[in-house]
Image (cartoon, rainbow, N blue to C red; front, top):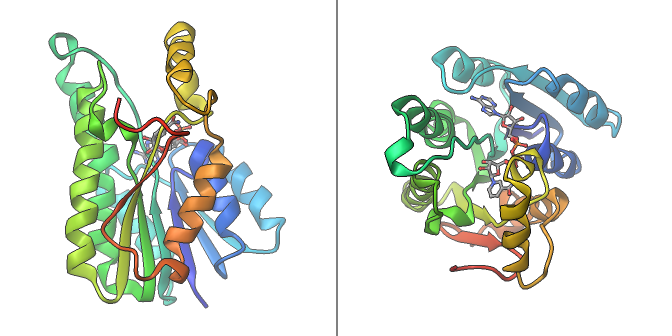
Length: 236
Ligand code: NAD
């Protein structure tokens, strides 16, 4: 009996990852602060996989403890740290609150969750941390870029520390069609799409396919890497 954990599973990329991982584990623990998590959980249970929704805020201690408590005694086969937020502003306009909020969700939560669960991983388990192509730097997103650069460092360091039991990778998506991407003003989003060689946004299911491979034992010799999925747009 193995369990998989997906954070930020209520919608978007996280919901697609949860759908895809349902075929790979016996039980899924799905985590999100949004009440829509219950709908995602019902949808996935219809596939026959046991689902345990945990509706909590991952930036506080109770939230992390609730995820650990949902595990019973099964070993963890897969952990996907996907929950993330943006609070964009240029340097001069960035508030301390927005700066701190992005680091707390995007970087603090993955680190605290992995730390809380570190003794619970199965042999051959996979951790996938969702970074972003923005780790390379994006205008008006220095807090987000910092958080995603931090996730890359966390991934690389823990790949060394948790080997050989666990393999740890980061996935860095480009522009993916979710509510987060729809929050970008239309004209800016259109320009971003123009710069993508594939001339479209990625689909959450396309990210989920890569994550499923990296979280599984099929990729057990791949660890400590950043895997970009961006329709051909990489460095600019
Ligand atoms: P989304 O906003 O659609 O979903 C994010 C989910 O995380 C939401 O359901 C939200 O409720 C949850 N969440 C936020 N804060 C939380 C907290 N404190 N505790 C628990 N849950 C919390 O976003 P998405 O587009 O699906 O993005 C998922 C991940 O992919 C994020 O880490 C994001 O940075 C990354 N990403 C997205 C894109 C994109 O273009 N959409 C590109 C690159 C990377």
